[in-house]
Image 1 (spheres, one colour):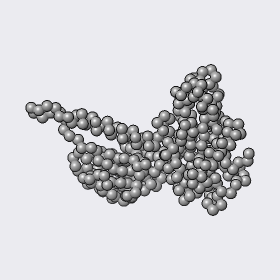
Image 2 (cartoon, helix red, strand yellow):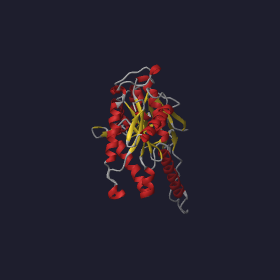
Image 3 (cartoon, helix red, strand yellow):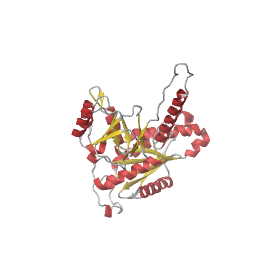
Image 4 (cartoon, one colour):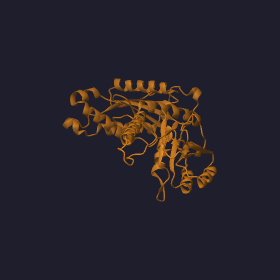
Amino acid sequence: MRSRITINNENGNTQVLIVGGLNGDSIDTSACPGVNFENCPSLSDAVAATENNHFEIIAVPMDDFGNEPAAVLKKIRQTAPKSKILLLTQMLREPDAIRFLNANSGQTTLADDYYILPVSFCVKSAHTHTGQTHGSAPTASIAESAEILAMRKRIEVLEKLAMEDELTGVKNRRFVKEFLRQIIERAKKMSLQVTLLVFDIDNFKNYNDRFGHPVGDNILKQAAVLMQKCCRRQDVVGRVGGDEFAVVFWNIPQNKVISFDIENSQDRRSVVSEHPKEVINICERFRSELNKTDLPALGAEGKGLLAISGGLATFPHDGLTVEQLFLQADNGLLEAKRSGKNRVYLIGSKK
């Protein structure tokens, strides 16, 4: 899953500045012959470069400048007001990137867009002159340009679908699993608690059969929206298939409240305090709000009928890998179904 950054190099002298480390595995510039890439590892070098050159694009990897790169962005914006500043971020820091896009310094935005690493730079398709020359018929370049534009839009749609669920707008299974893998690696280094929720809509097939698939689709959309409203900004909600969703909860570093030993992490819990209380509260709030959701498409009987069953599994207590956590969370979901539905079951809890 690699994001694509398109460069307009019609004049053949486009310059791109990459501030911070240039990791070939994360940032690929090989598909841009003729584009001048300059790498400045430090902010002072970048500022000096922008004072003497005009860069079409300035790419800033967020991880190279700590948790608060606002000062870096502000300084670059001051020295390169006409450049397009792009944030390059890991999946787990996407909420921070969105926050910086919405932030501003005075009347100036700190960044113009963000891309999730790894990224590939590519050159925009060559443009030919439109219109007609003296004494000649109009060229075919207008149609060609329209075709190129349509193709580029299709590529953008496909890239979006590689990360998002088309129906609900939340992340898709592929994104959730890759995000979970990355956050587990981060959690091992920083003693962060990561919890996976897997849930589905109780009796969803009955809704489809009784009210039709459009109503079923509407239920999925409303469930996705409500889950996002209940979550914290760093949590990731995804649809992983049919009426099944997954949510990755994690504590951002400044809020971490636990420490653990990986060697003995999967011993069965013995006290309630070891469970992720905030996550449990979020899940219960979501379940309760969904029970009260008024769905006009279901008619007078619709209100109060919508419920979910889910399973929670926590790293490192219940699993150390993506596969282990999904397996345990799925087991919890099945246990919730067996226990009467409309509940969230936490792996390791007493039955």
